[in-house]
Amino acid sequence: MITSKNRLSQIKSVALVSCGNFLEMYDFMVFAFYAKYIAAAFFPAADELTSLLSALMAFGSGFLFRPIGGLLLGAYVDRHGRRKGLMLAIGLMGLGTLSIAVMPTYAQIGVLGPALIVVGRMLQGLAAGVQVGGASVYLAEIAPPGKKGFYVSWQSASQQVAVMFAALVGVVLTAALTKAQMASFGWRIPFLLGCSLIPVLFVVRRWLEETPAFLAQKDPPKFYAVLGSFFRNTKTVLLGAMLATMTTVFFYMITSYTPTYGSTVLKLSVQDSLLVTLCVGLANFILLPTMGALSDRVGRKPLLLICAVAGLLTPYPALLWLVQAPSFARLLGVELWLALIYGSYNGAMIVFLTEVIPAKVRTTGFSFAYSLATAVFGGFTPAISTSLIRYAQQNNYGHAQAVPGLWLSMAAIIGLIAALILKERRHGEQS
Image 1 (cartoon, rainbow, N blue to C red):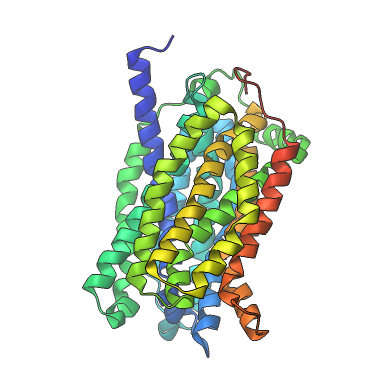
Image 2 (tube, one colour):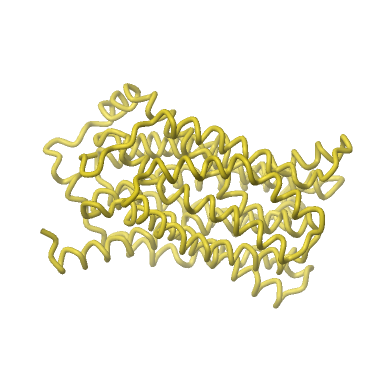
């Protein structure tokens, strides 16, 4: 029986986990939002698109280290506890963010500048590798029966607060500073703001209580035992990575890539693009808990299958309609439609992934699966989308700006295959 005291403790834990999750996504978002300025400062090239592509590749490099963080730090969490692992993730993320915030430019220290930017992104990637998995597993393990989808969805919902906050900071900065000031120092302000939150969030994470599920383990598995069990469940983990592919690709398309896509590709104003991103974050924040709760009632698979089919069939036509007459209203409409697909799919997917992975390697398996999907597909979505547009333009394809829709459809196919193969747990079945 759940008492009011227990319920308040669970709500407190959800809030504390979400606060830390906010920083992880905020730090990732600001790099993508200000990629245009980072490109000019650290990756100068003969043309703007090449410079931007280099910066987006640096953005993507952080995701390459997420599977390593998911595997190594995930094993640490499964051995030493959810609370300690989440605190470690905050520390690593803060160190990576600070290094980017204060890094001298290419003009000041040459190639060392961009090289160290990549190192900073790698530190962020290591931390983020266990952050999503650690937070999701924590929420799944404290959720009351029948509400696991709703509880776990707050992991993703807290990320949307970060998207909105990062976009709002961008709107204020672009209104207050000139283009020259933004290029000179303005882009560093959001990073420094993120750094200022680290001590507060570190203290907040210290207040977390360990989950009963972890404490119930009489002898938490040793590091080598976690890895051994992980490799025995490789098939499930890889299917989980396929399942997460659609989520990661859609997410980074509608959030981190939107400011660049709107301002650089569609030639809309930076403020308009950031306002659209702000609206997308708000829509996701509402959709994710709603769809997580719905998945508790109707099951995970129906939502996964319906959204995967929608993600397969509609992105390219939607983007084609947008690029035929680019405007703030059309960009907002298309992004909100893609947000509906993402929010509905992810609301069911995150909790589904915690349920299909065995308990003893739940953090390791979840973190590696999600991080692998992000590293191979999702994190490079801005760079891949830019490359596809460039290739289409060079080969004189009509409506080249719409080709990222095909990338979204490809991700939906992968997610659909995984959803069809993986078996859903019955209501009430222990995970």
